Length: 132
View: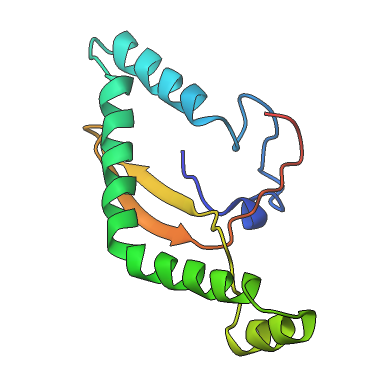
């Protein structure tokens, strides 16, 4: 199975919607891996995978902390402006002025279940064609 960007993949005639399809909950994917490993006489520790993912995300957040803090400071300066006109002026001069950030982490698991960071999306798609 190859997982890739949903916004591209969903246009494929081979894309399968639903629980057994291409876009599934991570817990469902980990359950599937555990079942396949068990049927082959192996074992798979989903808790260990989750711990590895949490560690990887934590390390990544520490690495990008300065960028996130700069964005928060920009947002605070916009909020503290005395008038709407001043706030607009500050916002135009400082770019996005975000006071929070939703990040999307693309992570790949190797055969041993170790997570590897592929990329971090600063504007991840929050769309879903159906309820997962």
